[in-house]
Length: 268
Image (cartoon, rainbow, N blue to C red):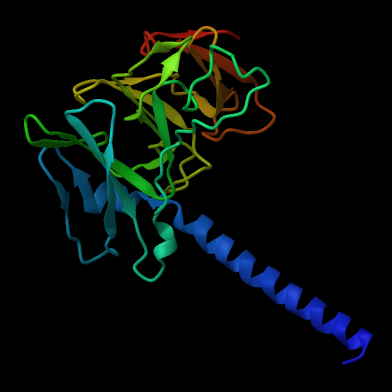
């Protein structure tokens, strides 16, 4: 094969690979959504069990639990629940490994403020088609759920099971947080990343849920201030009231001191 033919063949292979990759990405993006029929007609979670209400008029929402997550609260274990396409196992987040890292590099090796999770004492799982989280109390042998209907979970925050410290002092957390799409805010009959994203706090035994930013805001990212143990939530204000976080809309910053995680204050 001469050089020209080799170049042409390589270009065709690259183009085909790019096309297939694009198709896979499109399928994955399309898969990460819930129709309002799936949410409201077929499924509901209750405090005792997950029940799938069958309705032959609609396609079934197939779900799968992935693993039991250990938490820093010894009596509490979490069970992640996913929406799955039986024909495509890529819809499940199989790699639910801890975010703990004790080989973290710093400019000053003697830095006293080092901690081993993204936020000290708090482990994280990023959801992909995660539609709920089961909360199991080992002492009472009772399962409850963080949400009563399917949602799309972006990030799950939970007390890390491994030891961690802040300012060289051991630290343990006793709460959960979830960043989530749980409402069809733009009224397109889907729950997906085009809707406004909320953040909730759940107490240790899942007896109380607190919404951390107002309904008209959509969380877009967060950072952590280790000097003050503060969690910053950057949020877009839905100024045009279309139920979507548009890039030209103003960004506000809310902050939470993690020692009082239900007390939320607005910076700007």
